[in-house]
Image 1 (cartoon, rainbow, N blue to C red):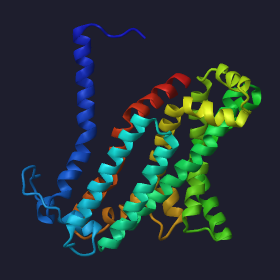
Image 2 (image 1 turned 30 degrees about the horizontal axis):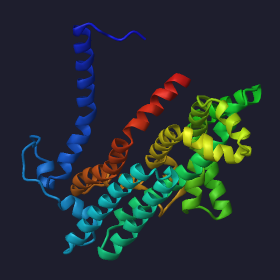
Image 3 (image 1 turned 90 degrees about the horizontal axis):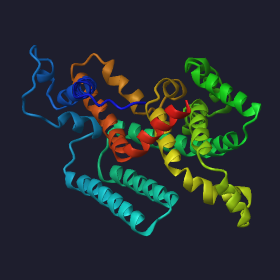
Length: 334
């Protein structure tokens, strides 16, 4: 593709991108404003852009009563952030394996999630957040484990069977959610797994697995076979060579595919709503505010939307390079 060099053309492209970015950010910006308003300010006839912000909506959303020891929560958040930074610095300096780094991050998050409700009177929305974390992590771990092995096998076996498998996976991915939501609902009732983490995780893995297989097969296809041949000459069996040689080489692809899988699981609404009654995730929980008739539900819904979005935005910003690599890799591989 020939790069654009004409100054006017570049200016036009940048102007369109800036306008599209503003158009995309405005709804989130308005949700932030609404979440910081009182109910009267939110229902003002003239939209208010300048007002005295309040955190009461977030307090009502996350806590059953106004906590007196906010400093403890702040210490936990600051301590978690500092631990993340130190862990990343140590991993870069001493070449800590990526698997250990991810395990450390998961352990730190789990410890923070356990400590917070012991020190604060958390509202039900916090339980929805914990449900989202558990389900999302479970889906990503299982999906990436199966997707890596399957994608590697398909990338190395170029026969007609691999093409049929990829086409079948793509066809399954194209099905609407409702096509298999009700059968999984009946299966959950029959097996006693209804309204459990397991049924949601397994169903979301099944729904997202075609995507992970497609992505991972594209990344593994870019890895030269000479690496496997060199590992074989050094005496490594196929599976140890896959773990010790191929996986590190494909780590950017694994990470970007894991991010996409995380987004699909984190934002899932229909399957979680059909398969659970008490294990709701954040997208499902927001509906109780958007569908309410009480005036205060408007500001609470805005606070819930912002609270749901911020964690995923931070993760995407942190892994932005790998996400862009996944987008470009997927576009090249089709």
